Length: 288
Image (cartoon, rainbow, N blue to C red; front, side, top):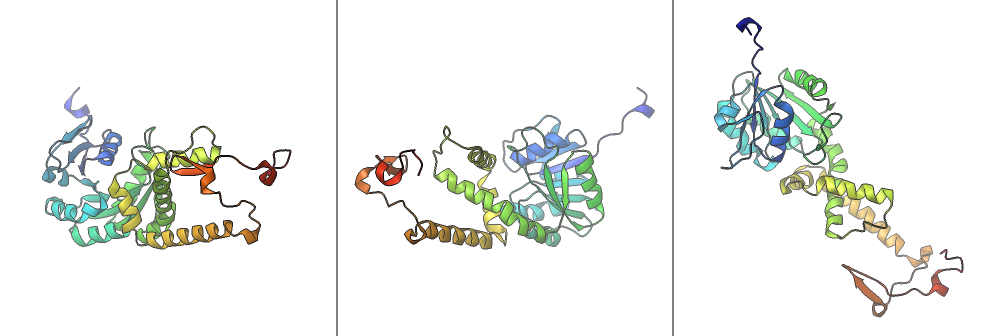
């Protein structure tokens, strides 16, 4: 092959933070970029087509992805800022957007473009590929956001949602925060039934499986850093408490008396009746 017909070299892309999501991003970006990755951990597992480098090497690329927990974003921004090139595009991948957007706007030099993103998936939910999955994109500074959104949509096949950091956090507080909250509660109720189940319950268990292995930093960011999460959480528990009171109010026609502790036995973390009085609770047809 003559030099004139040689393919153009791939542009470089740096990933700062090479944990589970950084590696996932690298696997899908390696065909479009020369990926350079940095992680502060001394021993980091690489991925095919990825070059492990130092912080300066990853931060000097034309495109830089900050794939670190939201709680470590400020120190990461301070560390990469001196190494960024003018005109570079810097993106984060945090689960909340208002706080990361503020940190990047304040800490990154004005000569770089900044886009806040939230891939609405993780390594587990993307195990069969990322085409069709959602990503929220919040343009913050510069003209690169439209080009970045087009790449995510056309090259990676993602469903791109253009939004603002505030709008993102308002919706994510319910859609994501409540999912993780319910999953955390149900995990503490395990073991859950796996034999006598309904399709709806199977879907709940599937949802739990999608988030149960997320890093603790993800849950913390979703439930604490999102400024709207506390309001959603209080509303949910208030409504659940009201429903519990309604279900326990015999004046509303509840026919089920509280079980006698002497007539119950432990099943896991629960106590269930040893037997039922069919004359009280069931008709001859077996219907309540």
